[in-house]
Length: 397
Image (cartoon, rainbow, N blue to C red):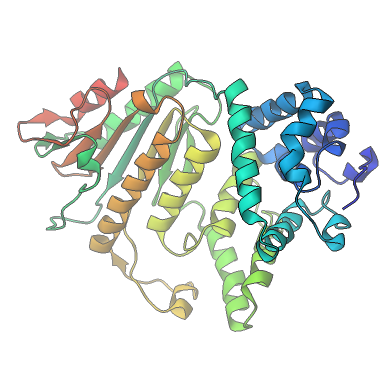
């Protein structure tokens, strides 16, 4: 890897990424070769990052830039002590930062340096967060998970994990429950209209409204099927997993022959759900779970609605990748969604303001729901009648 990068080396980058890298070129050149490429990789995709991601990366650049040369040397000393191969040092990390980091990871594992790298990374992030804590949300976050479409009844004990965190309601009068949730999402989006702050992720068709970002498994079928064809061809050609991963990483909406939606950032994000997720191309339940995880991790939204619909039944890999219409498994999808709701709650807890956040999981069209938040007692069951609208009102604050 060349240690003195020049501005002209970034000519092939996207506009915002190129400008950001060039503006911080002196800083990047001052950092160890085992650390700087991590910043490069994040800056490389700046044009396709959500506002929360950009803010976080710019905060890191400000933090490192504000250190004196002596302070920065001390901060980076554990990374500078790592031994890299000559091949790694000569690698083009500017134009292939992701590939460089894969090679770096392999080198650290092979040389027994991974533990030292992890310790250095944890200490760096602790120092950074001490001076640049993540900002509190503008309003308490809210996540809602809907599940159970196509299931008339079930003996499966729903919400076993979630009920320990909040109150299990067994007599929810849901009436116009779907509309109540949609209306609440729209009200929150109107009150806090920041971009990518309010999401509806759906295994079928996502609700659409102004200031709400919809992600629909059904609407993304052309993208999903095009990628499934690529994967099937790789499967039939006995392509190595590493080669397939490289092909997927280099895939763009344009290379799939798809027309852009007008939102480049959202196009790139939805594509990543299929190229980086495992099973998202095949199972709608896996897609919703992974999409919710990535939205929470990357966009850090104020409101998230994730709705599960029946996935295809389990079959052989060849059948699943064939694109042939298959039957669905509503009962199995309910179990998938129950676990997905638990993972979504965990993701919500990792964001700032978690102690004030609210979470609702509802067996759609049925009387069972679990609510977690400041207004709900932990590990409690409630059998008396309550409307879904009332639960949502408590969460709205």
